[in-house]
Length: 112
Length: 114
Image 1 (cartoon, each protein chain N blue to C red):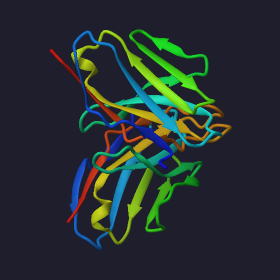
Image 2: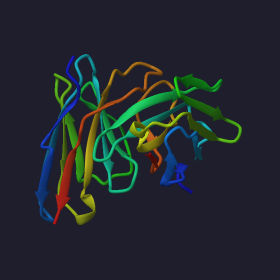
Image 3: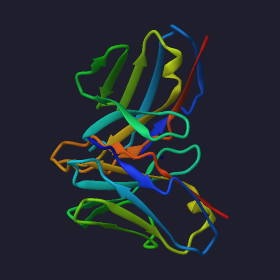
């Protein structure tokens, strides 16, 4: 079993749609969770951290379910510029450290 | 504030050769991590350097080695290149503070091994 699993997609959605991505992780001791965005042939960039209570940043909402070891990202009112690969990222260590474990990414294509 | 810069951006090598990739960390960051991203995959952690010492390593063979310099810049060296080493190599810098795990990635070095 992979440490972080995501549906690779692609998800093709019309502009304005709501889309949700899911991710599961295998290490129950994982401490930090993130969503990164990666545009084609570019580097990953942090989209948002994911907190146990859930958190929202504009059109983006992230949820964490520690019991089920499950992370989600919801994008509302999709824009063409949201087209990218979304990487689910887990840090299994305590006390800091940056040894992140990435999923393979979910590709999103927002269309007119 | 300058971001993370990597060089070269692209390079082509043949099997058995050696390669050195370079990374300058973001101003104020003291930790550098290296990741390998094969086509269609997520980045895989290679190793991390903090205060010029390796501070954690992923599942990569010893022919992958690195250095960190006093100015926090870093090098990734790969010996005896194999075809499967073809990938985007990403350098990321951060401030090594407990609980602070936000990485800033460079644009990467795309290595092709023929």
